[in-house]
Image (cartoon, rainbow, N blue to C red; front, side, top):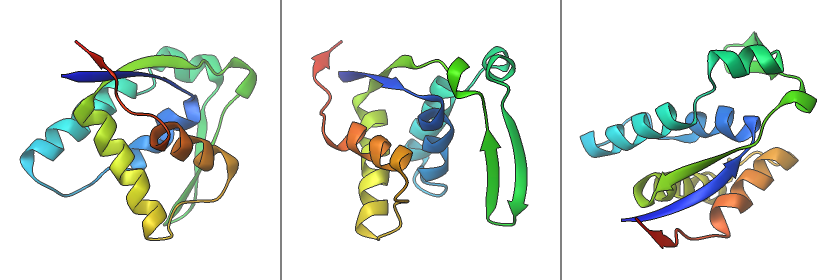
Length: 120
């Protein structure tokens, strides 16, 4: 199975779960769970970066953290995980629902401009 190593920012790791399918086939649910488990922030990271969230309204939560302490971590994603994230980002763009702030554009480009390449 092909794998892809990607460096993800704290923003990426917080945002990716929000774009993944919430409803689908069982196998999609397994891949979604694996992605979330793999990239989640640890309690230590939350403390280190001073992550704070507050509800703005029913549709929006404001999340803040200390950018200077935010680590960029490399993750080994399977082809299925990579393609699910890539497909979710493409779908958002095609439906004109991709946010246009720079972190979202960078996340999109990170997944759209590369392909899984190495076999494991």
